Amino acid sequence: MEKAQKVLVVGASGGTGRATIDALLKRGHRVTAFSRHAESLEIDSDRVSLHNGDATNPDDVDRAVAGHDAVIITLGITENPIRVRLFGAAKTPNDVRSAGTRTVIAAMQKHGVRRLVVQSSYGVGETRGGLRWLDRMFFGLLLKPQIADTEVQELEVRESGVDWVLAQPVHLTDDESREMPFASAEGQVRDWKISRKGVAEFLAFAAQAPEYVGQSVALSGAGA
Image (tube, rainbow, N blue to C red; front, side):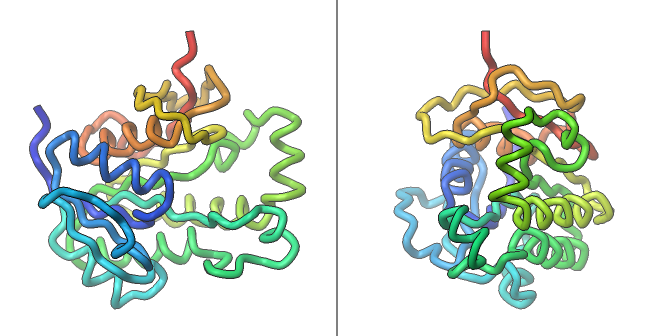
């Protein structure tokens, strides 16, 4: 049985962030859900605290990070990728991943919080060479600025000095499966689709387990 901890989820109102809250609760943890609109989350649990704030605002993040055992970051841009590529994001800073992660790391260092788990993307950093040709084209045409920001985000994490884990899921789906994904620190992939809820199970696991500290972990469907 895991030791109950207090875990901050940054980007809690997104699909993976919301699923991560449920995964943490299932493991017995207390959760602070941090988002610009955290009050919109409907969660019936006395082990969840809602914290409105901007991940790129140092004061907001500093207040949220204090007193936690671990932080999970699931920041991203949820707007239409074509619109974002052509005009930039309308509601979210284009560099939300790197800027938000940088702010969180600074607060963690200040308050002595050691464990950081960050949702990145397969095809970034160490797994860049593992992309299929169609994925490379998709990244280049539609997601190039977002992928570039994710590259910066990963660099911030690697240089942070905290006990970090980078989770790199393949194509995300809204399937209901909460099956723990196939996790590979060598960048191996089985099934090229994975549910957000499955990713959330890994993020919750990595918030405490020692297995993947200091590693970039490819997450894919468990397959056959």
